Length: 299
Image (cartoon, rainbow, N blue to C red; front, side, top):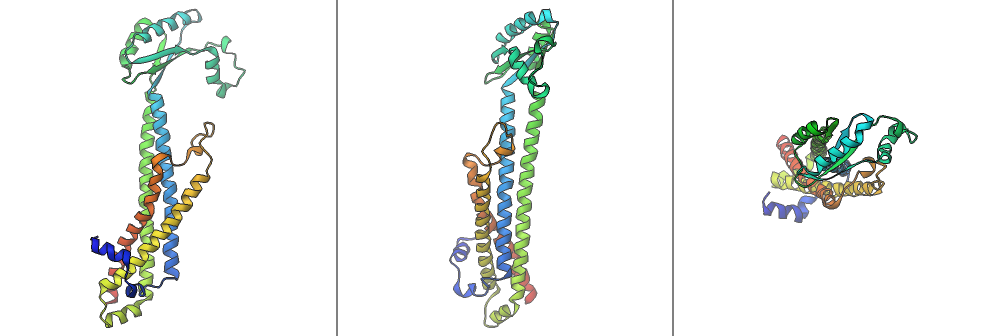
């Protein structure tokens, strides 16, 4: 769209604006469709961004930590734990390592077995928490050293947990993008339907305008401008309602998990502000195409 077309669209033409009825079924349909689709788009954005953010946080936390499990006879657990800590202390990429206490291991098992689990009387493996530095360590090399010096040690670098999270985050982002594309497509279809209805309802007016010398571009611009602004204001209303609904959701809580963290963070709040302009652009393209096709039919 050229600067002249944009200027004409924003400024409007009083005579051309009279061609399109300001109220009626098509006006309500355009406003409702744009508002409803913008409302849904806000939640599609929030769901996609929140899920991706959560998966990224989990992946980063798992990437910085590993777990070493010591499974050995009771009389050898202490010695193998000390040997494992010495190996980890001399391993490049390991920032620190510590053996979890009985109380900490009981707290990890409490959600599944309850608070009365007799940890001292059960052969529970000793766990060692490993925190990596910025560069990280070589898990294959560490496994070889542990196999030689600590036969009862099993290293879990959380790779099996990270990969599904990264994969799930990518799929959810793709689903969010697909949802936004479908919302845009439905918006275009509804606005096209409204534009066709308005053009068909004003067929006699269009015929009179042609008799007095009005060109099809003049008539098309009138419909494009009116429907573009209707879509913009409808989408603005839907965006505002969607943001209000997001603000009304509970704050993120550790015990609430993902459902209380559904929202926007930081600069992500900018994205919904783009939706009215996207809706106006979709309406501009859809109405322009519909108007020209209908005018050719009415010729």
